[in-house]
Length: 125
Image (cartoon, rainbow, N blue to C red; front, side):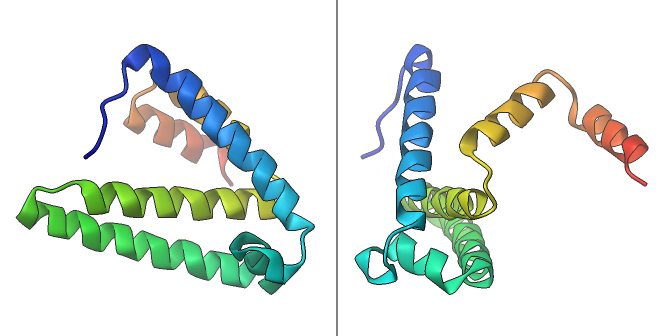
């Protein structure tokens, strides 16, 4: 069963889990490949990590399509967590963190998607 989280606890909880994952993923970057799944991904390199992100993206899309029929969000939440996790692995492989993404989302907050996209287009060659 999925639990509802009070809005006032969401940002604190979210920040702490993502910070904890950033730390854990950093630890795994230097670990022997056989010591953990994440260490094995880092050892296999960027292309393997990208492959996993693509795989998890597809699985999320399929779960969302299944939800359309079943109305059960469990698989969507599970697959979204898998995708987010593998995106964090990718970010750390590129020496970026969840905080970099949080800052970008905060920058965009309150700006319409149309406006943000137009601003992005104006600054790109």
